Length: 106
Image 1 (cartoon, rainbow, N blue to C red):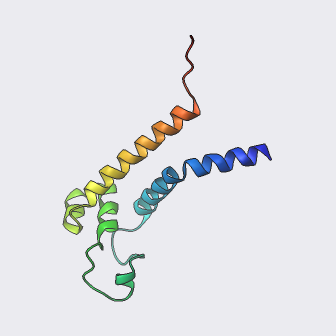
Image 2: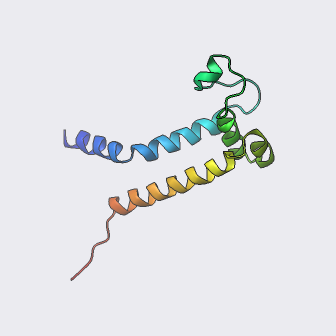
Image 3: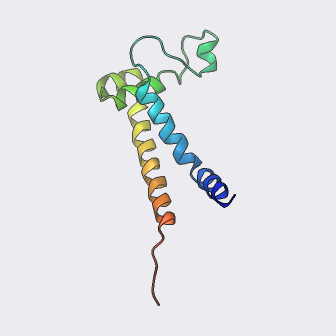
């Protein structure tokens, strides 16, 4: 029972890190050519010009190293990748800092 409590506590406190890593992994593994699955409700309703559409494809292209195509798809895609990576690094540092706290001697 104690082990289950510890695992659930760690998952709860690191949920944001898990979600960001999962989202980037999903976008990295998604195909960049052809039709793709979208969560956009406007696109699913048939609206052609949604201002947010293309951001996921732009992030995916940036993750695959196609920077010029990424910027062409959506100008904020590369910025989103940088911000998300920065957040992942910050959350990872916090995870390892609290996981192995430094001991001070007085």
